[in-house]
Image (cartoon, rainbow, N blue to C red; front, side):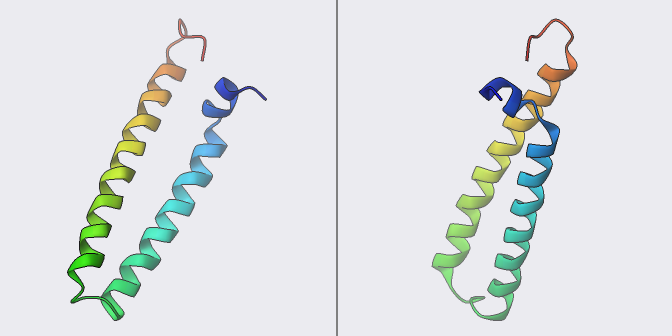
Length: 73
């Protein structure tokens, strides 16, 4: 399977976003239980959240490209 086919595979992205959601949910739960006063942890969560938002934008762009019949993706 080529990289273009892999990036265009909806199952890959569904697995990625489910795993990301579970990981972030666990991290948020652990933050509420153990690290609520940790400024460093909250700063790291913010940076990771920005990375996830960027990845979501990238994946949305791939979805729009796949919906375009003129695009070879």
